[in-house]
Image (cartoon, rainbow, N blue to C red; front, top):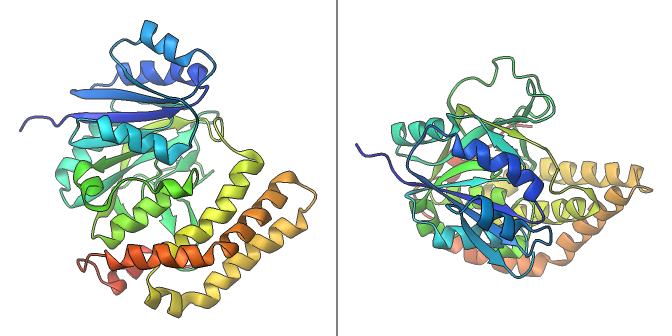
Length: 318
């Protein structure tokens, strides 16, 4: 069986110093064939010129401005040619067999619409950033195994809720079925929204523990802006995607989770990030009428391929 073409899409903004390490790790990949698409969001550090000079085989989409992660990803997917599409943060370094491991899992599990990499910390390569993503019945998204020592507990293939889009494989058929990332999210948790829509449409995610990438966590993000979007988009994901039976069954846990986040931010009110998180939560509440419209549109298009009971089984207990 011929090896499928893989399209690796890398959004970047003023990230030349990251690409100088990321791209050589891709050039060293054992897997073939693959193409690299870098979506540059109006960088002012000479990234576009450097890429044209040093990496002529890389396809560069030069955007006039930085519109965020979701629009960048969608632009890259729109020009990609691969049957399999891999999203990769620019502040990463991949092991030489990373793509081979992702494709191997995808080919052995044709029912997997998504495959999650194992992301480890750049600064301490014995520790995890993400062994895929979870979503709790209380409405809390997160990285599996985050900050833990990679001591073997995360060494088995398994079905999980979602990949972290910092290093994830998706089938093109998934995007054909449900569309790309929701650009109304801007940045942060847009991959969780995508995973919810994929799960609602009947797609599943497989964790590939030997597909390893090292990530400079928050090297291209973080700070008050990230806190704002995380606070807001947490509610965006919840209201837009979670089916009514799950909300009705677990609303006390959902309210508790929201209150805990609010209380933690109030306790650290003097911090810029805490205040930004509260502003984001407030923005999410103010947006509820709009979110309910999004919810009706989203769930009206839901596939009947997966039941609420099965969806609940994919979520993590509190």
